[in-house]
Length: 175
Ligand code: IMP
Ligand code: MG
Image: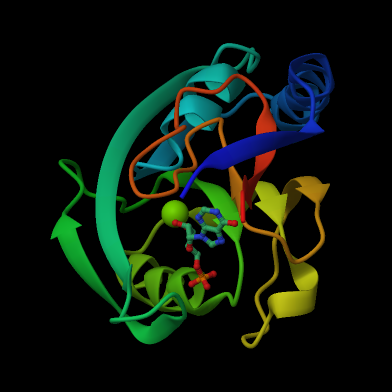
């Protein structure tokens, strides 16, 4: 079965929005050091592009979690596949996500991260699908709210493909 990608958010629009968020974060964290946590693999492109636009000191750490059960709906539990290298205690942590869908992954991840006693913990996501939310989570920075469609690009994949696309697209299938 063939697939095509329909562009939803072109590269220049995504880049412009990331610059805006980078400015907001730089102002909000003025005088502080931001500890970015990139959620692998989907968050990797957004984390890099965002970090390049933050003007206060930044450090990075990486984490990989599995959110999905057997189907395409995420389960309530997250399993840590790769844990952070460094402790969070006393740090101003900004969790960087690719997309928030049901909110299940994020809410269990937050519980886990708060136990490590960061000074603050905020959330930044490139994309948000608010219509799909089942868990109430407060997201501090949102790139774009999008409709309930399966998107790829900028780190997001379909079957591990399309993560490298410099724009956000919707996967369409040929009949
Ligand atoms: P949640 O637990 O339902 O919020 O799931 C969030 C995770 O599901 C994201 O971090 C993605 O890995 C994946 N996901 C949700 N929607 C999409 C999509 O449209 N495209 C690609 N991955 C998605
Ligand atoms: Mg993710």
